[in-house]
Image (cartoon, rainbow, N blue to C red; front, side, top):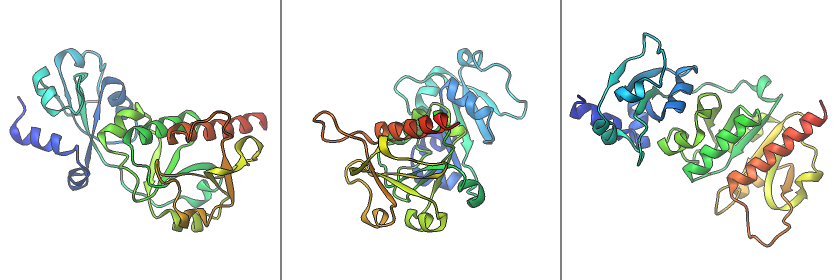
Length: 251
């Protein structure tokens, strides 16, 4: 049986303040938890119902696995329909940038993305297209927000997400910058090369002026219909897909 203290700790991790305080975040669902179990992340503890435990297979002996009832899972879960598996995972240690490595690849820069679903989808999309580093502005929603973690479907276990001052990062990176804007050169007439920074803006306000001032290439996705704008996660997917297409064509 879970104690009141355990329930209080787990439910508090729905909030960024307490995630930072305890150095932990929540992962829910069989698939997502298994992804983190096989990653470099450190698992603090695992809570499963007896039924869900049978779906987890063999667990490493060092994993602290606690069997709970369906009612207890309901109390600690942030989901409307819990899958019976919840893990507490240690927040990763923030490492410095490996500039020689970073300068050889494309990376996503996210300027104040606010919606957890959008960020989660972007992380999942990035992994699909082989982009393994995402650099976020300080104002971007926390990647370890349970809703973000859920939306990544396990991709967060492999994609590194950093938070920093984007303007400073761009100056230090000394890499070509491509900004997704409503006006600019067509994405389908743009050569992205072998490395660069792909900048995506806030859902309502786009990319901040101070960031745009550092952009080398203003890029737009040509509008054929009459929609006013594209969802930022969808726009990011189109950029990632075009970059991948060019890489595949160029061998």
